[in-house]
Length: 164
Image 1 (cartoon, rainbow, N blue to C red):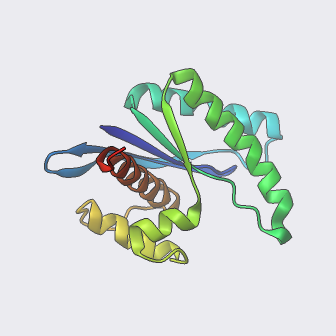
Image 2: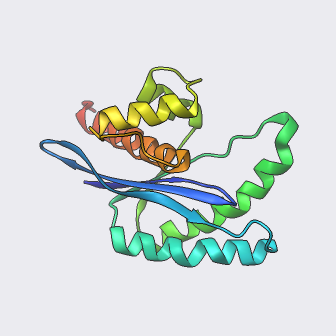
């Protein structure tokens, strides 16, 4: 199964694609989609949309995991702006016909590091260890996306393994 994790952002949207194989999870591709931060919002969203649609078409994931909105009471405006990027991302996923799961940041951190309060470096190191990479993935947005993909794949495996 091929899983794509997406860490939404309005400057950089991280993505990470892994494939579950009998020998373990394998990194397919990871990186960031850069978005011009000084451009007006409609142009920023368009700069995300095209490359994201191409990425999904090229990688052909069976499942896409997207980080859910995290809203801090002091940064409510940021969460509202992030909703614009998430809308573009969710629409691209729906148009590609992919199954999608949303996961909270703390749930993902706990799944990959053992702590829901892990910092960026801990997430990067945990992802590198679990995917048997020579070095932690850079930038942290890509590592976060890979963590989303790993967590989503585990959740899916747990659902399949549980008797109904």
